[in-house]
Image 1: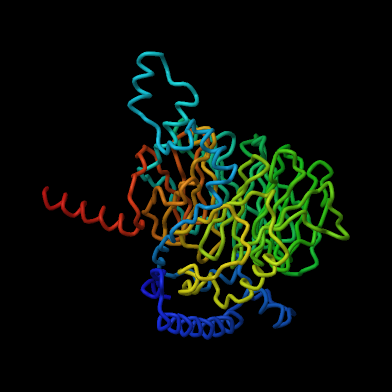
Image 2: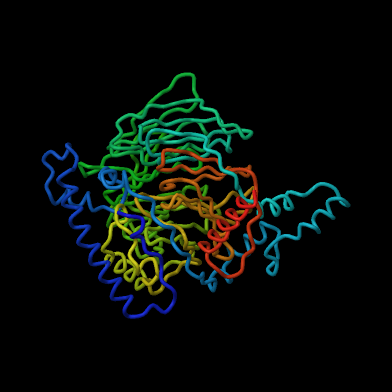
Length: 524
């Protein structure tokens, strides 16, 4: 796949001729996908054994992270960035999260940016900045300067902070987990863990809230637990009871009290594991396809959320959940392709989902979708005829033409690219930014930071040569880490105020910056 083949979204008012061309391009993509699926079988795993062609065909066409993905993406050129679509703020302007975010930043409804001159004057007269003032200032200053802090020989799948930012953990395709001291702007390797029973790669890692253990998942019937920075490294297998022979937990999350684990699997089920009893406590039939993302919505651990390749985000209340008749308390429909990640705001009401339809959606889980909207969403997903792991994004997706009638999301953020793998997104930290931003990895080797309140791209951190799969903002410092399939981890530090731009897309801004750099070099 050539990067020149990645087509940017068209302007508003695309003509019939362009539509026919897009339809023709999508048809060509379908033929290409059929050929690649056949090829996947021919070069497939030696562990196929007695599996039927039908079963393996389902595995190879799964839209989630899989062992086959590496056969096609290993030498894949970096795709072109997506073009952001004009944000529709109608629902956001009336939503509670707008008030909560403005209040957390100390802004009023008419004030978008703090008046720094006035704040400095007040400081000289009245003394040091208050916590509110510090958050307001930090909310306008973003990590900016890149420094490569780790270089491996394989793809980096996970990279996240733990213990209030004092440690940083990475998981790599070389089957190693590495623990770094990231306190006080340090980055020093403290522990290297050799993962066990790994099929193809470690796919997800969760660190317990108490910072004592990590749990990782792969193509295996078990989760695996390891203690962190202890005197003696102890590995434990946490067996699950799936029906499928080829089984994988794509997403794993700890409860706030560290007692339970929640996992989402390729068999469409949610798995709950009781760490104190050391056994699987629940197996919940949740989605019609792979479950790519799971989370505990709040600290009570009663409310769960799951997102799958059916494009739906489902919300579950364990107090009303029966394993023999599992029914979510509500469903959030709006995406037109599978969900890759879920991040809760930790207020018990809001979360964001990243999707293969090239968008992030913000949700209020008190406002569920109607039955008609759910069916519309499922139909839109079933109409997708392309595979995000090795194909380009079709024109109709890039142009955001596919819509779900009755989409109940609060806001949609576009401008990043989701290809090749399950890319993560997060709310920015509460302490330093008041959760003003939403940030995500990108298949075009970038970190994209959105302003939650406007829907626009505030900052793009470019520099990686391949897909950025995971991103982690330090909970208290102006540091952001990006983990990439170019085998590296980059720390973005220092600060730069977000540019206040007129209407226009990010691509134009990048070109203008590049032209200015050329002029500066000529002057030298």
